Length: 101
Image (cartoon, rainbow, N blue to C red):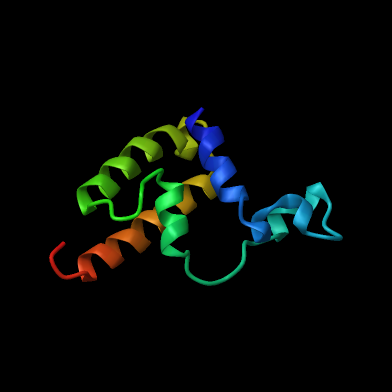
């Protein structure tokens, strides 16, 4: 259930949807890369299943819980683990740079 929720959140983005890649066949996945650029803060909260305004501790706890379930060594994928890492990094950077956090 958690993996399906994360997958849905990640695939909500039109740039990441498989059917949004015209001319690409399913066997060319290894060649395709997601759009370049930093993850939006709102997407990072969504990936980690958090509401905007979550604390640094909540970000770290959500990351640890999800990476424990979605790590490639536990049946997850490299892509999902990378998105979790990116979400954590984006939010940690934002929260550490915010006064009073």
